[in-house]
Image (cartoon, rainbow, N blue to C red):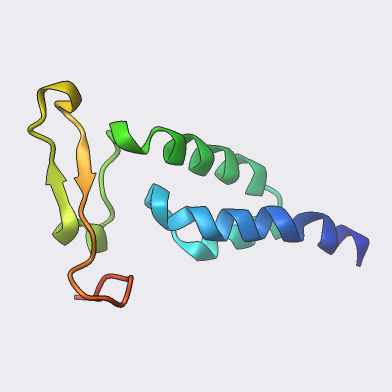
Length: 92
């Protein structure tokens, strides 16, 4: 039980931050099999650099992604807000 409680907080943080870094919340389950620290590091790095996003969007994010035309952030992606008030994207 102590081992599970040691990964509960990092799993929760990974699940919370994952959508902001083009990962899925279920990727937090990787903490249970070992590579969770790697994915948490990648997710934290991407969230930190989100204003300068240069990674490709997931297929379900493409409808909300726009290529930045701002000269200061040229070559990066912008993730627009969802159209509805549900806070998530549709599964088209």
